[in-house]
Length: 306
Length: 306
Image (tube, rainbow over all chains, first blue to last red; front, side, top):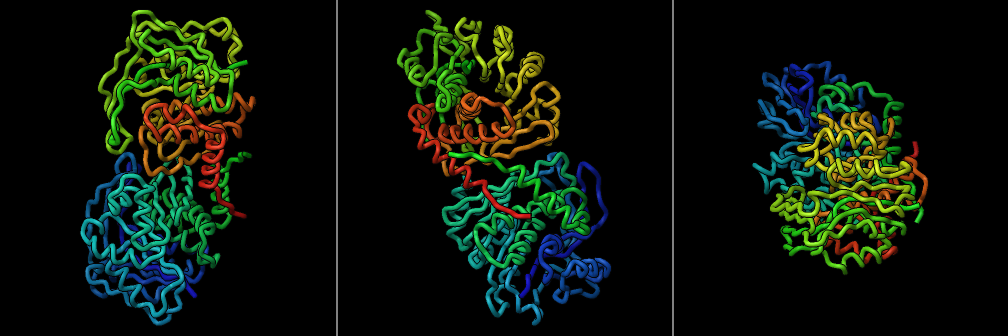
């Protein structure tokens, strides 16, 4: 029994109004597996890097209970590299560079020891590769969570729809939910996406929290109001990783457990944005996480007797 | 003991993607007093209309427990008229016409019988007029809630600041909070506004709910996710009216009561947007309101044991 995370392990170079970084380690699988690692200890990763990727970073993932047998290291090739600049509002960004490198011909090979996977996190990556991973698992996992982004809607819409059809939970931001569904109202957008395959849709609204839709039920999760967002890179991946990691720990998939999973995922994401890249996710304590979750509880609590 | 509402009583002509209206009755005091009327029955209004304003509409306010002794009817003059067109996203609108008419020389005379006012709702109106009302009350009310909008920041910033200084609660939308404070982060914006006079700031975020700030405490209220927003006109006024009406009913001003007041105000506002103008607010039952509040409770509820 394990949680399989696929996605990118990569280099990012980030500029925000607060400063800039040289190449630092990022990628959807990095953030998602670090996020999950605070709740669950049998995480397995499938991703690809070049031989420019530091061994110390791989060891750091291993220290976070991430099995890296499925992390391919391509000799003589370079890791995926993205650089971007955030605007003053921190909600929008320009991509400065995208070098696919090893990602161009990524074949997601699943080690035999990974076939016990019960929880599958399809981190943001080409929908074709996400689908290949599902097809290579002998037994369908108990829960498949998929994250994606507008980029794939623009260039691979049909493949994206084919992959969405196969998953249980889709996590997507509000603008992307509108783009995917062609509906402006998020309620209508979610209802439409629920007819595309997933039984659950999570619409991430950044500083406005998240909405979970399932059948005719809706849960509205708050976001922690932050005075400073230092770097939003990876917050969505961290959220998704924390979400599925919490569910893997609890072991039962239900609407109520998903509500809590969203709160824990949001708490992890709120740490992520406090420093550049994944820095803040490297050394969190359970006490810090509990205190942060307690803040979410206080934030949303009201008591009305009707 | 009473709740005094000041603001506009006016005609609106509204175009939305769903249709358009001829002149219908609107105005901040109309929406706010209707909103408050579902919780409290000693509402008194100060506003001005022309003699084009239908007597039947005044009687309808009276049926909602609104004392209209302070509603001035100017012979031979016309009521304030606004017309606007909402864009497809229903979040932005263009003003097509603004005819101030009776508002141009509005002197807010407070009838002697209104001097028992304990709760004061300063609905959206010129900050100069709002301030005059405060100065004409012999005893300072127990709670003064002020609503305003960007228009007054653009043309009467100093008067606005002088009025804000005198109130207990400021309700404002997110873009206006940013404009008023010069801060992008809503946390920083609210902190700054809390140094300007009010002890409580409510930032209205439309479809994303509302945030209440007081000292170092924050409450995040959800919005009801709606498939259709038919006409957002008056939703903010209705929210503010429901908010102060609930507090007047409860009779104790505290952070916890304000949290509940925000939920009740939001529930009223969620009805308001379902039809054109104030139509939906004319005949709500307590059962409908309770059921709607129950939806808010279900929407935001989660249970985490740490």
